[in-house]
Image (cartoon, rainbow, N blue to C red; front, top):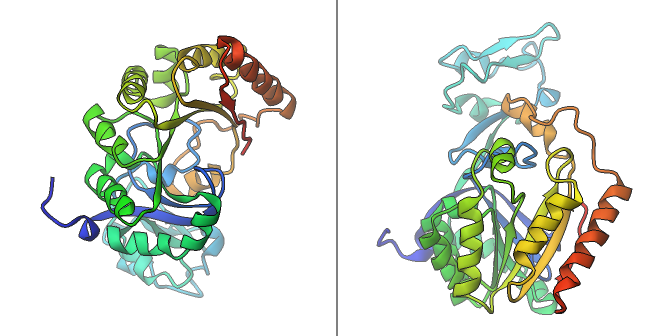
Length: 320
């Protein structure tokens, strides 16, 4: 851990989004941090997966080499060429992420995901909307990626936010060292915690890692902070967990825990264009969105199963 004061510590974020109403109580500002411990096949923020700054290319914004001629000559690895339509072609496999070309691109067709920011500067952005938080019970939410990958920065953000009396929430996949999650819990008002599947093999295939640490960490989190509000969320993905069996197993795991909410999120493809911008293939290409009928059926099933323990459990279902 660094001796740098919390408000001066720096991290890499790729977006600060205001006026969110789906990522924590009330109206919130979300700080999206770079870096993730998982590689979910359906990830809607693929630009979050790398911890470092990252080049992206949107050919729709390219002026063509004839009209511009800024980027090709500055690339030291000849990762840029010209297509038949006159627009730049970017070879991501040759690129070394020096990011020089993005500095000279006038239209930001070549763009960088990620920038460095201090805790103080990030929270100044949050505090711009302080009036909305007090009226709605909102505050700041750390998201990603997995925000606790940048543990030193995220913990400093949470500590400093609490000093400034800002309500704090985090969106986490839970695949982080327990010691980091335990420290974060000291400064959190609420947690949004993803559980995608109880099937270890299936989880590893679609997510790139086992679910054991994730499940163990949730149990420890509720044992250590029983009064901390935790909303468990499950993205419902066709072919992965879009069955009553898969959803029922998750509900059975969480429903006896104290102070738990459960939320279903419907699969969508809104993040898929960003894979192309990064020079990647979308892993679930050809997968259709979940039908409203099936999603509603799973929502009603989860609602009924959550109530089988005889206690009042809150269930919110959001389809993105």
